[in-house]
Image 1 (cartoon, rainbow, N blue to C red):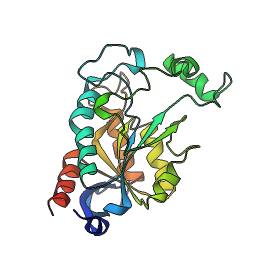
Image 2 (image 1 turned 120 degrees about the horizontal axis):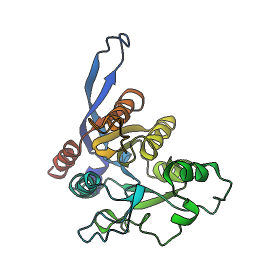
Image 3 (image 1 turned 135 degrees about the vertical axis):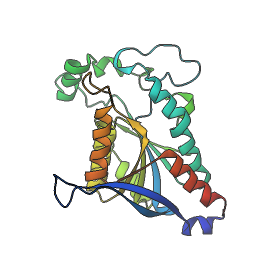
Image 4 (image 1 turned 180 degrees about the vertical axis):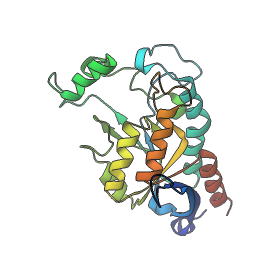
Length: 251
């Protein structure tokens, strides 16, 4: 594909959303819309896909809340990585948001205290680099063509340059993958909506931790995806996204 054709090409993707009308008791439910995403106005956003343990040579160094989830491992290797490769083939920029230990974090920070209460993790200690917690496995590590935005809190937009990174590239549409669908990814796509980005989350490329009461049926992740489809934007799948990219690439 030439530079000129890439500038005028558009990705055709089916976006799913959820309709609450005519009333909450009997909503119309799911519907789809054909989305035209100009390549020069679209980016793939990878939210918090960090953590050692997703390569073949996992050394078991991560434990507790950071222990690699085998479902996430498969998701990263078999869906997120291929989606990134498909985006790269047709020139869609890929942008990462990733956590780091901000110099502004101190012992009185309420986010830090909450993390200690609920996760038994003191970021002031656990997030000091180098640490396998915040490393990227080789299978999904950013490269020289990627943009990496480092954040402290849940949202990739909070006190970062993510908005400038996207606007400087003319981005209007965000195809989003990563973790956690209720927390960091969920807050990031909410703030993307506030900034007038059109959001398409690949629903088989996101996951959240499940409580004991929600594990059967994975209801926490279900509700997170339904919330996105009802209140934020659209969802699609990795397969649909990759196929859409490949159709562009074959032109």
